[in-house]
Length: 108
Length: 307
Image: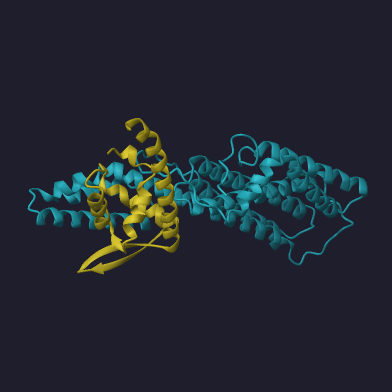
């Protein structure tokens, strides 16, 4: 799947990964890869500017802490982020249903 | 120097951000690469450094994504610099007036009156443009993907505010110098006026530089086309009203301003009428000329904010 197809969905997917609990950048990129079955051809570094945008918008918070002797910036979903994720998820579901309604009709 | 260090050097060189944000970003990318190298090593892959680098993207491409975010952050801070310039102007205007006894029976020369009037108009433009910039900055602050048209309008608002601020400061200094020349105020007050111009100029030029920060075009950033709901965007709602009812907005602004100008003219009725109508004309002209620039009228304004 190309990066172009991911436009508009990366933020929601990052929020969805963080819904499972606070985590750090590399783990987020691994989670994206695993959950998508490796379908996304996205440079791993792309997630950081997106995380920073989400942090500026208040959907995500972060703190720099030491984990197992290694410095890591942990990202956490905020209350506003949960609301945003709920809205994005609902929007995506209705979008998928609508597209399926059109594309599926031809396949039947 | 290994491949990871070379990557980080190239990445750091390509970053065009403030030192604090740069430190955070570089640390984060370094941590990511260290994690990736560890993971590849644990999996028994050959050349784990290069695999980690290949997966994260090119140094310049990655840096440009951060540069775009940094530019947006800087641009959203620009109104506060413009606010400082306005505060300096207000302070500079007030300081020379402290302790000064009004002289209603003494009329300033026509030249000084005209300059003072122009400075007052410029100050009004500065305040309106500053308000527009602040309202946009507040509206865009919580938006992960501000529309470029909105950011451009924000930039224009700050530049207009600062330019008007500088004109007002220069006008105020000329007024003070004229007053000092005829002995109406002390040389110290005139000096204070000079300090106003310098202070406004320094802060204002900083504001303009920050507001003009160029946004690099970064494709494939996973941008969202959605905008958040806007319960706090009071300023943007006011702008929406102005755009829908421009004549009513111009009247609602110009008439009270004219009444204030007539009240402050401290002259005969006919003289105050000149001030009042000049003020009305100036407000309407300013609205016509600056309205499109500030997104207050015309088709070039920002997209309406979602309710």
